[in-house]
Structures are given as C-alpha cells and as structure tokens.
Length: 181
Image 1 (tube, rainbow, N blue to C red):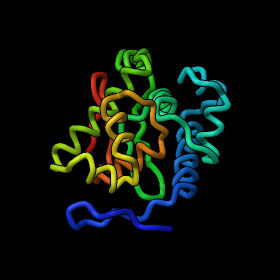
Image 2: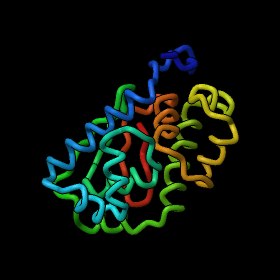
Image 3: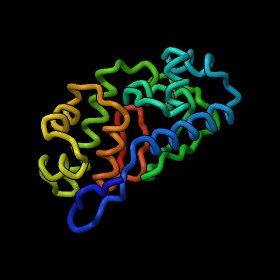
Image 4: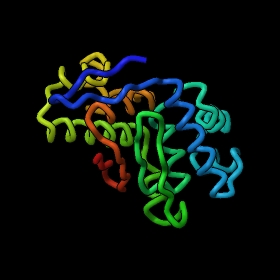
C-alpha cells in the first residue's frame, strides 16, 4: 500500500483499490437490500445491465462513473460520503419523484460533464494547478483534463482517487450539478 502525494502539506490517506472496491460493493448491496430491491429490479431502475449491479456489489472490478451514478440515483442516494476504504450512502425517503426522474433521464455526456465541472470547480477553490491535482490523484494530467471537461467517461476508481486527492469527502447530486464538499 502506498501513500498519495500531499496537497498543501496535508497527506492524502493511503488508497488501496481492491479494498476500496470491496467496501463500495458492500455499501451498494446494503443500500439495495435496505430498499428491498433485487439486483434485476435495481438494474431496471438504473438503466444498466443486472451484471453491472453484480460487479458493483461484489467490488471485483471497477465500473464506469456513469453506471455507478445511475445506480446511486436509482437507490435514491441523496448524499455520498467518501472514505479511503469505501463509501457510505445516505438514502432519501424514496428513490422516486420529479428530481429522480430528471436526473435519471440525463444522457451520459451530461452526467460526465457535471462530474467534470464539479472536479474543476473544487480544484479551483483549492487553488491547485492541473499538474498538482493530477499528481495527487496519481493520474496523468491529460486524463484529469479530459475528465474535467466531460470528454471521457472515467471509471469510478479514477473519480474516487480525484475526489480524495482534492479533499472531497462528500458528494451531493442535484438536478443540474454535482456538489463536492
């Protein structure tokens, strides 16, 4: 296990991808069961293949940030806490309603753009250059540049590495943006 570079003297906690994926998977499963959903029903609500839900829950492989976003929306996630060992979901009263339907209907490029804009804004608030942020996240600067502009659909691991490197421990989805705190 290796430690990430520090941003402004604050060391980023160690990030171990396999443990992180397993922790996220356990949380996805917990949330699905709390909603009383089968994998198939969750996949239908999210607009993804049931195998994608299985992969996310087992944590044996990375899933795209878009598919993960769709699963989170279908679960009714109102807030996502990020820890170096996984995520914690705060579920709303119900994964339905106008806000859910408008978010669910967003095309993949729009979701990618919302994610990228949130990352770019967070980096600007911190006063970090693209080089500093990409080094802290252990990503090539061009990869981060493309993520920030919504030109690529990044894997969830890459996104979480960026969020953690930028000190973002909370994500809150809105109909028109993603808020990183």
